[in-house]
Each structure stands twice: as structure tokens, then as C-alpha cells.
Length: 166
Image (cartoon, rainbow, N blue to C red; front, side, top):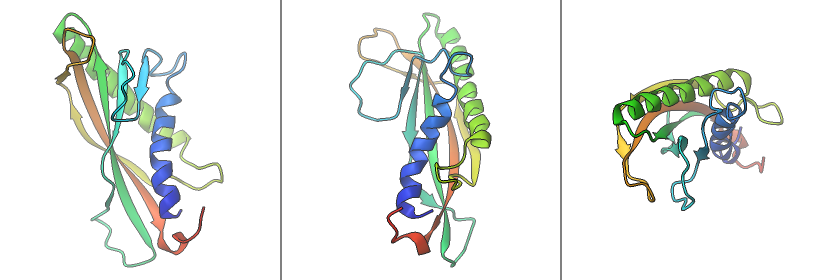
């Protein structure tokens, strides 16, 4: 896959993984909002999952001077949950974060190709789980618990295809 297609497909595919479970009977059926942009002024209905894409880097474990390169794009999934009892809010947030992780892994195994059959990710690795945090949200007087889970998505680009449009 060329670099243009690879980098644009990564965020699209990650959101698809969550949306596949954001249905009746899905792992994320109780989630009200899945947010993928950082500066969205729309109100947030919780429980919600905020998808934060971090900087893509070259995989430092693969020293290859060939025409292919492995890139790693970390995604952080911040799970926002409100409950009047803060301890219960943290418990619910942790549960939601683990269900987000399950959704990622489940759909990586089932749906990892583009429409033309190219593989998007070569590997998905767990990086970090941050179980306790809280954020202020406009319109709410109390804090909302924020639990995050981070996965590294490895994808390959082919420099020989870099000049092709698709």
C-alpha cells in the first residue's frame, strides 16, 4: 500500500472497528458518542469514546533498507463516563475501556482489508491502560471519569508504490 492510502486508511479502519460494535447486541451498544476529532464543539453524551490518534513513527525494531517500511500509529481510546458515585464511575469507565480493547482485537481479526483486498494492519499491540482520570465537560458541574487504553497499529507502506495515486 502506498503512503497516502496507508495513512488515510488507518484512522478510517480504527473507527470502523468501534462502529462495528456500536450496534444493538454489540460490545459498545451502550455508548452514546464516538468522537474522532480533537476540537469538536458538539455536546458530548456519555458514555462516550474519544479516539485520539498519536503521531505515526517508523518501527525501530525493523531495520530494513528495502522498499517496504513498517509504520506504527498509536491510538488512544479515552472512555468518558459519568456516575454520581465517583468510584462507580471509575469502575464503569474501566469496563468500557476493556470493551473498547475487545472491540479492536475482535474486528482486527475479522475486518482488516480495504475494499480492494489489501491488508491494512500487520499487527495490533497493547501499549497502555490508564484506569483513573477525570475531566471537566462543559455543561456538567461534576467531573466525568476518563479511562484510556492505547493500542499500537502497525501498517506497512511500499515506497515503490509511493508515486501512484491509489
